[in-house]
Amino acid sequence: MTIRTAIVGYGNLGRSVEENIRNQPDMELVGIFSRRAELDTDTPVYPVADIDSYRDSVDVLFLCLGSATDIPEQATAFAASFSTVDTYDNHKKIPAHYEAMDEAAADNGNVAIVSTGWDPGLFSLNRTIASSIFPTSQQNTFWGKGVSQGHSDALRRIDGVKKAVQYTIPREDAIEAARGGHGADVTGHGAHLRQCWVVADESEHDRIREEIVTMPDYFVGYEVEVHFISQEDFARDHQGLPHGGHVITSGTLGGTTNAVEFSLALESNPDFTAAVQVAYGRAAYRLKDAGLTGAFSVLEVPPYLLAPESLEELLTRDV
Image 1 (cartoon, rainbow, N blue to C red):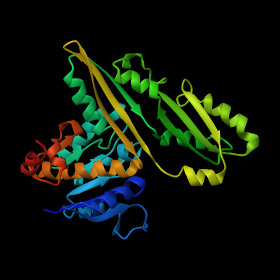
Image 2: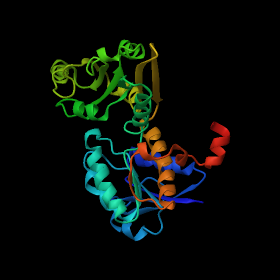
Image 3: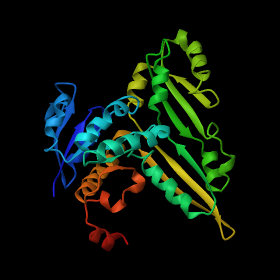
C-alpha cells in the first residue's frame, strides 16, 4: 500500500510536511499545489487553480494553510474533492470548522481530519484522557518556551521596530503548583512570562518599550521583559521556531493527590506539527478505505491508525 499525498500551501509548515513525507515507508508525494509558479523544491509544482483535475491521483491532501483566513475560506472546497488533513488552530471556532468540513467531506465521499498538530491535537487528547481519569480534576495548560507568532507579529507592527520576536515562557512556580495539585490558584496571566527581543534605533527604545507593555490583548496584565539587541545578535540567536508546553491534570483518588503530565519540548514547531499532520494523513486514508466519510477530530481517530505498523504488530510490541 502506498498512500499518494499532495500539499497545498508552501510556507514553513508545507516545507516540513514535504520533508516528513520523504521519510515515510508508505507514502509518496505527488506534488505541491501553489499560487506561485516556481518554488524552491524538487517536488513537482502545480497551479492550485487546476487542483480538481488531480482528484483521482491523490489519496490525501495536506492543507498547509493559515488558520486566520486561508483555511476558513478555502478548506471546504478542498474537502469536496479530496480527503484532507489540516492544522486549524483557532480553538473557539473549531466546532464551526468541524461542522463545515463534515458537510463538505461527507457529501462527496471524503474524510477530513481537522485541527491536528499539538495544541489543538496531542494536547487535546491528553486533556480528555487525563480529565476522564479523575471524578473531579484540576487542569492547567502551559505554553512554551516558544515563539508566539501572533505576538511577534504585533511587535513588528510597532513603528520603528526593525525586527522582533516574542517568546512565551511558563513560570516554574506555576508549573510546580499545578504538579502539586494547586493549579486552581494559577491564573493565565500569572502562569507565563512574555519575553521580547527587539531591534530598533536606540533613540526609539523608551517609546517602543512603553507601547509594548501597554498593548491591550497582547501584553497588558502579563510580566513582560523587553530586550533591545543588534541586528547581528538577532540574526545569530533568534532565527528558530521552538515551542512546547505542558498539560498537567491533578485530582484526588482514595484520599491521595495524583497528577498526570504530558509535555513537549520542540526545537522546531513546524517540523513537529508537520509530523503529527502526516501521521493523521495515514489515518485519513485508512478511514476512507474502511468506507467512512465526513469530518473527524483527533479525539475520534483510533491511535493505531496513525502508525505504519499493523494493529497486530502494535499489539505484540506495545500491549
